Image (cartoon, rainbow, N blue to C red; front, side, top):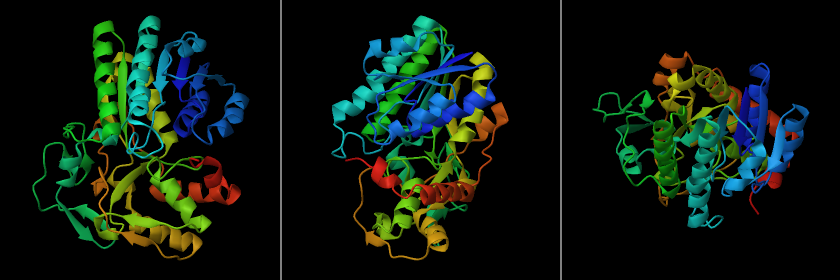
Length: 355
């Protein structure tokens, strides 16, 4: 089997390559990366040592994908991953659309020409910001928690958000690019008979992750706390009660292997996240960091930020039922992995943060 991975030197792309290299017999893995994200160069050596072929290429340029040769499956892990992409001052709005929409189009054309299946890594941020902000929640201790006595909208419950939840705008500019990519992928699959798997991922987190808070809040918070840098609770009264779930990319790789082996039967949209069992608020994350590294103050900024939501956990019941899959790594195990990586690589934030 030949697998091609875009964004292969990013955190998720590289973890997919290394995990699948171990799990799939006789697999050949090749990938492209434009190395635009600080830190991406650090993964090239590990991939090469594992027998993974890495080429320089930008998915915004269709001809760059030709260096991949043939493929049976493509895992599209290349994107501008921040919910603030296009408005954060680091990337322009046109850049965000070119990366996340035009890039997907080029990947789909690559798949069409080779009759390859596609695994598109999408996001929980395709879900409606207004609908998420309207979920029935109560403040309990240091976190927002579901109000189990209240009525819940279609596609959501105290167990999380399902694939049927609203994707009505606004979803953020970033979310809109991922919704558009999903629609294009489904239509290409239907038009040309290609298996298309769309994994709407929650927050992915692990030891080698790099980037900003918007790209990986668990990793960023642990490393920033351990480094003694300033941290701030933003919005929601400056309490840190906002909640997200965490998923290790190795668990995602297990699911993708099963989806690929299922062929066309694995096609569809799937919520993929740690779920409520692996969900944690920023305040609870701070408590964990305080126990692990020692206490320190956290500033409070009550100013509401555009597109922020108070609670978002992924209900992965459909993926569990269909593929017999469930996350194996607890959120506390993921945090400990990040902490251990930081202790070995204390300069990681400086190495990988945007200039």
